[in-house]
Image (tube, rainbow, N blue to C red; front, side, top):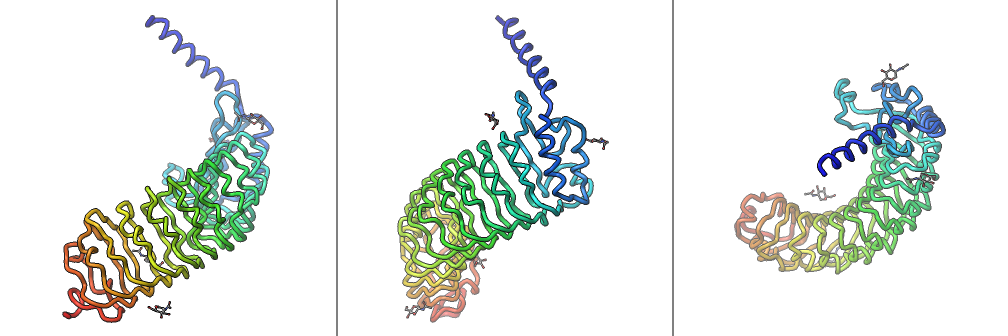
Length: 368
Ligand SMILES: *[C@@H]1O[C@H](CO)[C@@H](O)[C@H](O)[C@H]1NC(C)=O
Ligand SMILES: *[C@@H]1O[C@H](CO)[C@@H](O)[C@H](O)[C@H]1NC(C)=O
Ligand SMILES: *[C@@H]1O[C@H](CO)[C@@H](O)[C@H](O)[C@H]1NC(C)=O
Ligand SMILES: *[C@@H]1O[C@H](CO)[C@@H](O)[C@H](O)[C@H]1NC(C)=O
């Protein structure tokens, strides 16, 4: 039995070794990679110097292939890397040029990462939406322009989409909500305009939605509250208006909510503040108004609670001082009045957190 297991194991190993050895990179895929390389210039590290010889699956930097079929599965080129090639030169990556549409002929690609090269320009090739095996598309940290391909929703296997830190404009394509497997979406720091699709909540697998630093208008879609896995929603620094959807406070795993730097109005849903899973809540620099609901509980644990630069009035809720932890509290620049509550969460908070209100008093401000 043992010897059978052993020989089976040995045979499997042998078979794997043989298969790896006899399946070099298909010539058409090698040609596609060379066309991709030809459209880019990487002057400092010399990563493309390794792209020589006939077997692109062997020594080519950033390229990986399926060991059985020999098809290229990964193009993984990151300008920020712990790789010795980067360490040796002590610098991060820099590349100019464009992303060639030839890359789309690598039909078995599961991972396309061309990120943090700072100066790659041009459009996202629209043909990437034909890469039906793609699970990871990361083109962040370049200087890409143009629009997100309209039919991005066709890449049904996509689980990570990052286009952050580019100069992409136009609207978020409505087809994006069809990415049923999407877990991580980062479109931060681009020039996106228009509204967040109203049925954004269809993205049921999404755990991080980062849309900060664009020119998005309209309101936070109500459907967001149906996203049972959403832990992190950052739509800060846009031009959003409207109210906070009341059901956002009932979301089970939402722990980071950044709505700061928009033009949103209306009250803060009490459930948002009583939700003990909420750890980072930034509503700063909007037009929120009404009282701060007195709903904090002993389990409230806020790393950040920033309500500054709004139109909140009334008193600072007494229950806030009963909360377990308050790392960074900012209630400045509102219309609050009355005595600052006493309690351990307030001990380390300095006067700036309460400044520019109508008539607050008590430690750390002047005595009442
Ligand atoms: C090909 O790349 C390898 C590194 O992968 C390098 O050692 C070799 O010098 C290169 N050959 C040519 C002809 O550039
Ligand atoms: C690789 O791509 C070809 C052509 O699109 C396709 O027929 C094949 O099913 C793919 N194989 C895998 C493992 O995805
Ligand atoms: C909250 O958002 C404001 C406005 O965008 C920003 O200036 C501030 O640093 C944020 N607060 C924290 C604690 O990160
Ligand atoms: C702030 O709230 C007051 C009422 O409390 C209202 O009269 C005023 O218009 C609001 N200001 C802004 C800028 O929303």
